[in-house]
Image (tube, rainbow, N blue to C red; front, side, top):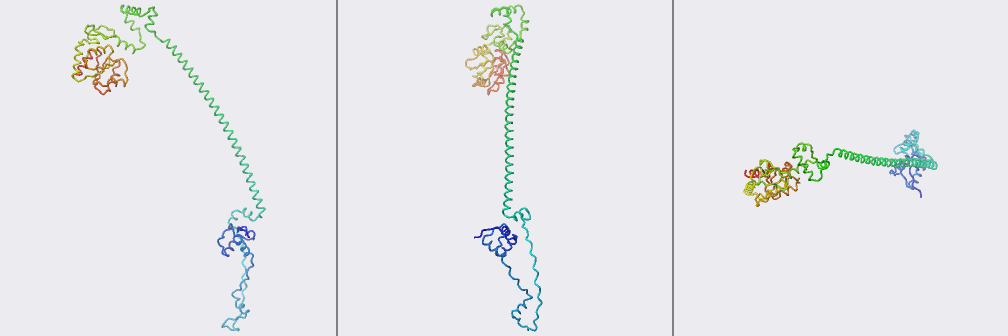
Length: 400
């Protein structure tokens, strides 16, 4: 059984061009085989070979020699006599056209090396192909070696880079620790220097100076101060003293010292040392009748329907006299003005109150007033620092 074969290969065997075989196939009615790369079935290939090798048919007699041919066969044309018939001059047969050279295929024209390989015998072509493949394998091996070399070099560079990075990190950490140690030593030195400066600049207290003078105990200290006061040297002593805690000294003077008129009807707040002054300067009554002042304030509060009030300011000694003097039907909440209050404490102080009085006896009048001034109740501010002034000013404010 014949094998299938490509037109190009069959043409090479027959010594014909693939185009001639394609034209022959078209003449045989197989026009679907139009390319030199098409593969022919074995049976059709055998028929094509037989067609190519078949002898050519004799040339047909020319038309002008038809009469002589007919005469040689003993046939005469009807309606003509033998005398009238004249032999026609025989024309020489046309010269056979030279055979056209096989036209190289488009692929062969584009790639002459491919055409040479096609024309070469199969073993030689196989050797050439094997040589090409061996050369390609060699190049691939060389490329693989080069790639492996580059990869090894990159890996070595990466390892070296990582080592350098770790070394730099260690150096940076060491420098950071050294800097922290230097900063700690600098802070310690600054603290020691500041301590020495503080010790050098520290002013001893009055008690230390009295002890340095040889006085022992509060009794001897008091007798020494009284002796200075009796000798009328207070001005020299007072101008020589500089308080180390100004706020604490002010609070002490407010809580422990009261300017008092000395009258029997004017109470002295408990725990406070009275300093006798004129009645107009009295911080308790301010020269007024305290009992009458409490009665008038109680009456004004009752008339205005105020049964629950909050007074912010003053000390505990003043608060005790306010509770005792005001009408017991009025609930009074008293907040000491010498202590700082928070917003939450202020809200609790005014909770349930109908009136809030900010008394000027506070050490920080503006701060206290701003804290309690935001309450959702009526707020009155009294500028007078004396208790008598508080009663009078508050009574007048309720009357308007």
